[in-house]
Length: 434
Image 1 (cartoon, rainbow, N blue to C red):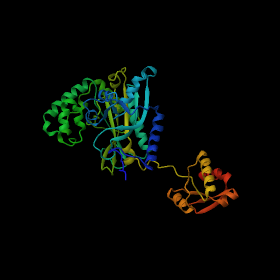
Image 2 (cartoon, rainbow, N blue to C red):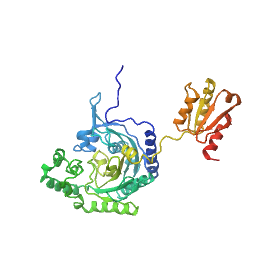
Image 3 (cartoon, one colour):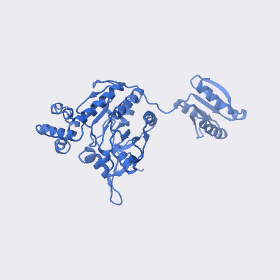
Image 4 (cartoon, one colour):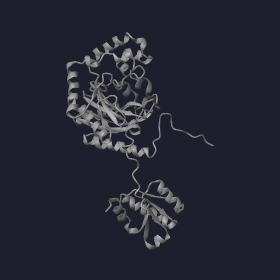
């Protein structure tokens, strides 16, 4: 007997009914974000490794530890994309979008790949839905993106709160700024000086980050609750006038849009390309037992130029699909569409006729199930019941001879004889209740 081959660890199959909820979530995102002008972009899953080493940052955990990188047959280093922003920016530059339009709004969804420690809602192949807005320097754009997300979650039944200690069914918007230019340089020096005095209290990764990427120390999951973190310098104390005005402008716009928020100086994000405001949306899951980040984003004004494009301000976010679908929005997302009718047939001629009728009903817009197997009526009715079909259209020799079908309501336990030519009208009547 052959050995069973299983999926790669950390890469999951998504089966019905979860797959239907997945489609519903993506549909809701696309429909809402489309109202704000975001249009779909699709980029390759495989990119040049250099795109991420330059774009995401050599000193990030993603590039140092987590990327799936390999050599192709021509010995070129390629990588399965670990995130989407760099890919969008590469496409923006490659296709000369800046020359074609002053403002670009893109929406994406798809799989990303990172070899990281698995935990609830975090896998090595994971999916994101996100947006990128390129060409707008005003702080109103990232505020609008946050407001758009608040609208999404409120539509899905979650309640916004400004308390970090929120409960199941609630979410909280958390913002910060990582500054830019001289702000970052001054803050970086302050962090190095501060953490150098307590280096032995930090984990091995943070000790290494002190010289390579000190802002990432603030995002450490190992040292996060230690006293040395709680009293670390805040970026807010090192902002220059321009960065301060931008951050204040974003806050003012959020207030104008009716969006509550909490400022947390420890929000820094794990990617080097961020400049200025960053944000997260946290939701609490009883299943995970903690508040978890379900959306993260911010401004990245230098990334386009650093990858060879023209100076271009930009802001965006990404939503972790698995966390949202499995832990926070499962009850709000619809499963598979309800079956309008199950066609049960008796005999070869009736089965062929039933398949043809099912085809016509489906083309008319109905969800129909029909059994192609030569099995008895009892087994077919049992399957119809398992599929929660309210109606069963029974078809046998007697019905064929009379040119009609027996329509049985499985919940009301009544039967009606309906002409075969009138099945579309009958199902329409029952659907509309007319």
